[in-house]
Image (cartoon, rainbow, N blue to C red; front, side, top):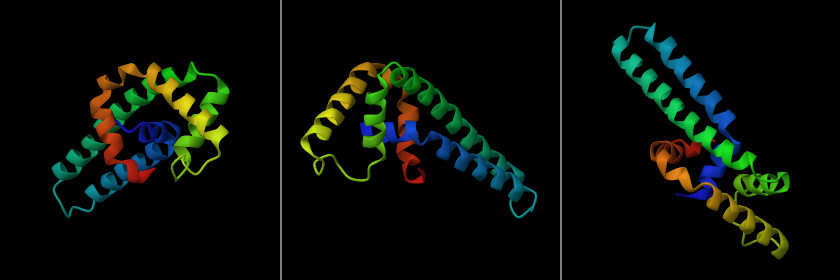
Length: 129
């Protein structure tokens, strides 16, 4: 489990959800063209809907964990999740704050293993958010 990917998913879930909605809409519109059988498009749409359900349950769990943290820790996690580089280039104080917040998040999110399918989907769709 890559904690940074999980945190990035949590803070960028709205963008991923909108993108998946657009893909579902595109498949629905393509089904009217008649180039492929309707079962193909129905299968693809149901795959995306199933993925959205799994990701939604993962997000709800993460929201429960993160909402119990202090606001400054949440901001630190958001900074860490949305940064494109690692924390080694940061100054010592910021690096310590990030490490502390990530460790606190990891300790509180012990039930993440129940969401293996959602975590796998985060890895698959990671390039989209």
